Image (cartoon, rainbow, N blue to C red; front, top):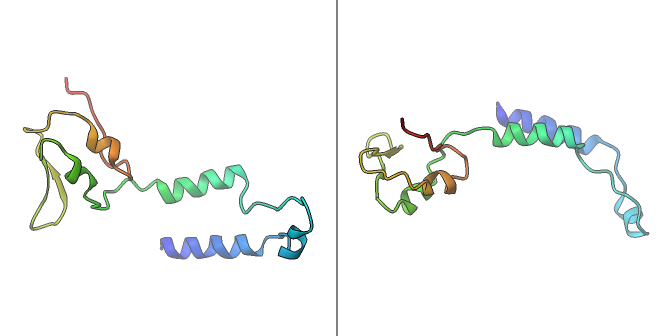
Length: 105
């Protein structure tokens, strides 16, 4: 489903009016950008808004307490909260933002 959405966006973007390469090489003519700011923000939200863990292992590899492991059966990342000291390295390094730090009460 997502691939189809991206294909539709690509087709729309390439069908927009733009300058030919020969015209751009002639001088300082402005080149029409692919997206206006509002559309670019919406596209970024669509593509980057998925906060699911992609199992890149950065959190597991950088955890100083070794409390982040990979489940052998499900192959998913697991955090042992009994050993976690709450340093936040995993949340900081996660490229997807899948780990959030929450203050315990």
